[in-house]
Amino acid sequence: MTSSSPTASSLASSSSSIANLILSKFIVALKVIFKEQIEKYKLHHQLKREMEIQTNLRHPNVLRLYGWFHDDDRIYLILEYAHGGELYRQLRKTGHLGERQAATYIASLTQALAYCHEKDVIHRDIKPENLLLDHEGRLKIADFGWSVQSRSKRHTMCGTLDYLAPEMVENKAHDYAVDNWTLGVLCYEFLFGVPPFEAESQTDTFRRIMKVDLSFPSTPHVSSEAKNLISRLLVKDSSKRLSLQKIMEHPWIIKNADPSGTCSKFNP
Image (tube, rainbow, N blue to C red; front, side, top):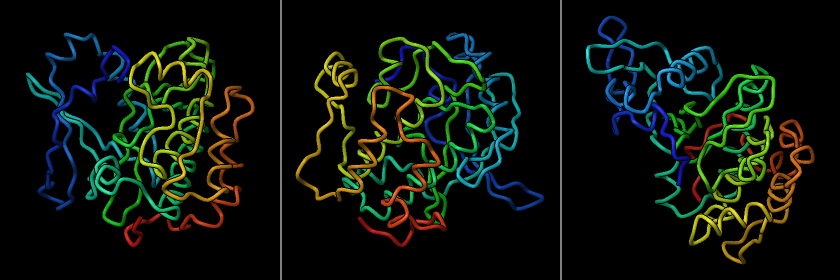
């Protein structure tokens, strides 16, 4: 369940085209956004913000936005091509990930978010559907539709329900720490196959998030170090969540994450 307002990216053509630039033979992906939808949902400012933010980010774990062009009906975003597709599809296929693979993805995400936060960018919608993999299994953050570039606290509730931090659920001001919370949610989902606060109804999910109703199933087997990292990220008081630097120093990350950031050789 997402916030009621769509993003320009969520309205994009469901399958990005693969384009081969004639002169350079450089393969890119084209994301197609229909102007009619931008007008209908009044997404002009949001799309412009998304494009400006992503164009200016240069990090190996952030999908590049090289530029854009348009015709009478559509806007075309020229994106880095991620051969491996969505991490979401891999996770649904395998059920869950092994600890080395999960740790490598979390370390890659942490480094990318540290870079974004240094640029005053809060992502606010990290989830498996917004994470792509390149031909080496390197993770790429792909969608900045809910991102904002700001040094002040924000008040807009946005993102996807299962990944929302308590301060967002409670309509309180939020900052970079919402991304740290999401890392805890993702780490749990990578290892157990489902988000930690999933429930039958939206109301029950909200309640579980606000209470930080966290429990760990007995299967699959997950190490105590991984559970420790998750527990230190899924903390209601945002000021007490583990910092991005401390995540990289955590024993589970040091023990399991591949420093190269590639996962093609791992199996769950």
